[in-house]
Length: 159
Ligand code: FES
Ligand code: FES
Image (tube, rainbow, N blue to C red):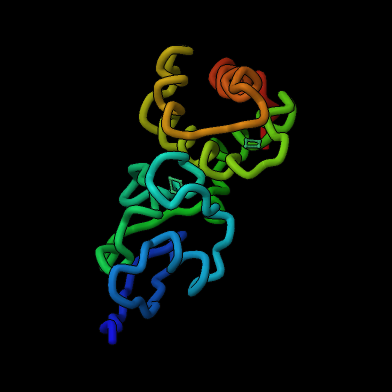
């Protein structure tokens, strides 16, 4: 039988303690134990970016990160990204029709938030590079990149 561990981490600004078993992924712990279902399950292999969350401010694939390793760390999921920048990114994606099925969208917003926190005005090549691990099968990326450029150029409406 696999050993159960108690993990305490800061999740979306709040101290949370949850149980995890064996090599359970952070993605499964967030979704199934903490009911943060905005972190999407796609490939489960670190290839699609649907499960992107911020770990101490840096984007990671939560499907390949062992939940137990989150002890003492700070995690931000899409549910916790309600700051002005993230809100403008969300609005710009909607306004540019960057959401079709929406399955990839939380991971893309998390990734863009991380990028624009770090670099205020990345060029298009940098935006595309940052999103290279986030697979969207619906939009072809143009609208998503346009949304990021709108935020950078101040075209998105204020929150
Ligand atoms: Fe994590 Fe695809 S589900 S990268
Ligand atoms: Fe459907 Fe991106 S909007 S996968």
